[in-house]
Amino acid sequence: MKKLLLILLCFPLLVFSQDEKRLALVIGNANYDKGELKNPVNDALLIANALDELGFDVILDTNIATREGFIRKIREFADKRPEYDIAFVYYAGHGIQVGSENYLLPTKEVFESEYDVQDYGVSVQDIMRYLSGMSNQVNILILDACRDNPFEGNWNATRSLKGSGLAKIPPPTGSLIAFSTDAGNTASDGDGRNTVYCESLCKNMLKENTSLDQVFRNVRADVLKQTDGNQRPVEASQLTGTAFYLVKSSYEKEFDEIMRFQEQGDFTDALEILAGIIAKDSLNIRAYYNRAEIYSELGKYYKALDVYNRIISFDSEHPQFDAYVNRGIIYSQLNKYDEAIADFNKSLEIDTISVPTSTYYYRGKIFFSKKDYKNALADFNTVINLDTLYLESYIYRGRLYLFKKKYENALEDFNKVIKLNSKIPEAYYYKALVYKNTEKYDKALTAFEELIKISPKDKHAYLYRAKIYHKKGFHEKEKSDYLKAIEIDDTHPEAYYYLALLYLNQNQVVQAERYFTQAISLCLSNSGYSITSEDWMDEIVLSNIFLKRGEIYKNRASIKLMCEDYKEACDLGNCEMFDKHCK
Image (cartoon, rainbow, N blue to C red; front, top):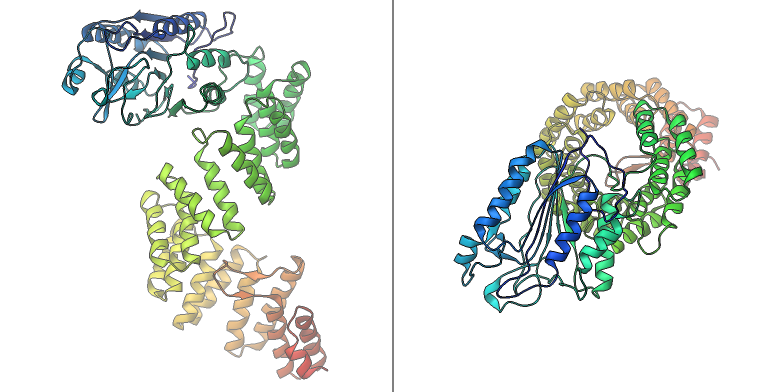
């Protein structure tokens, strides 16, 4: 079954799948002897009603007095959980962190020390173990409580106690954990019947074709605005699969058909169905996202841009975060770097909590292309801090260190990639370049040999290994590698150029002329292609090839051909030989 996620909605006439069985545990604790709260019971009742309307089987309890009663209710939920596809847990009330663990508090237990909390409170892990055991399905845990240490102050009329806040809870695979406020802050109990967080959550769940991620972003924007920035909801997710839309669309069969066509590569029929949906429902955001995705897959980037522009124009109060991220990626593919950076910055301005790690990665790549290495390094460091397995960022950061001649740092990053995934060719390639630049040629050769084992058709491996063979005087091996590079790709001038130099040094002038001529032809056919390796390598421009071939004609006393080549070099900016021999 697909990993879909439904969360509470405050709407009685929603369409939901009869095939998905849904179970919810809802608890609201308010009548504490110390620190009584007004709204947790109201919020729990509102949530339970909404979930009931959505087809959830709801286990509801309020004002649970003892730890025993709390655990009994959790076990009731746990016993039923294996029979269901989707699990939803909502808790409103007091929450406390003791050490690195988080506790939910029954209303009538006495908490005078940390040991009392550990003995008579309910650890969040007592709930999590029943969710993590079902990691192949979907689990949602919402803690509408703040999480502070009670022993730094008295109970107050918030859903927390004073303190430094709660350590993050890493969600297991297939789970989402949401908090009504960030660690170290207070979740307001609200002035009305329900809290700001609960009301906003209900309001945003009403929106058809709004992805789950966007719902949480909308809630965060609402709560920040209504609390003057004092309460910031956060969530951590390990959900998998494509974006899920909380309110099922009346076009669900059509979207299923579109997905089937996309998987088959039949984009024309998919676009026709989307056109029909948009003609009937001009504000169907899901359809627009789908259309933009297909245009991107087809390489029709400007059409995709038009679609994302349309999406962004729909709702100024809740900007479509994903549209900015996706539009930024397309701009980067079109080399519109300033526009891409502006979009990535906008996505970060909208929501730094939910921003995908890839946003920093793509922005870092753009900074790298623009030679803004300081900002590039900052973004790659951010990616690695957020996701230690984001191997592409290690490679780019390593390249940056390589360019800056911080060879030890570069080598560390490339070795890290190889340790985590020994099948990534780029890591061996750049590792070899580190050794080449530090004149550790034997180690460079070993790295290139490892690269060729996993990627035998990598022309660059042969090209640069040939250069190392040249340094070591192994000219037959050098020649063999240049010929292999040409066999793999006969459209790249660099191998021809170096092979010609090798023949020239060996006084095999006919072969040298032949390969210089081929290199020139390829350069000219590529609109004046400049033979350039990575930025930190020596640049070889087309003028050098004309000069070298002109030298052959000079030694052969072919003055006309010599002057023609020297004139070509002069037109490219190097006039020394033309001025000396042809004027």
